[in-house]
Length: 58
View 1 (tube, rainbow, N blue to C red):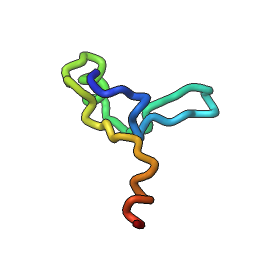
View 2 (cartoon, helix red, strand yellow):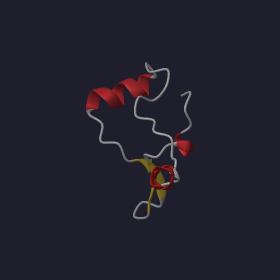
View 3 (cartoon, rainbow, N blue to C red):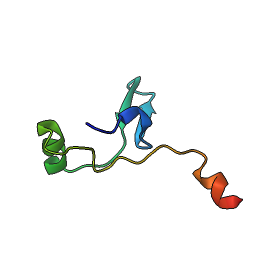
View 4 (tube, helix red, strand yellow):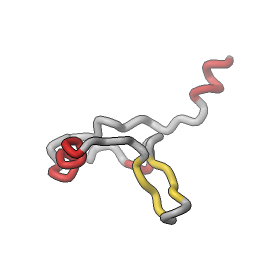
């Protein structure tokens, strides 16, 4: 995919499974499309910008 999961705000560490996972709640159709790679880039990609809130406060 064009967007890297490591840079996505939805990519979170799951301590129970000891692995990184996507936290987006997808339905079966979306999962199938992602598995087929019919998307050029992930439609759920959200840039992980932890400073976004701080900039709004300024």
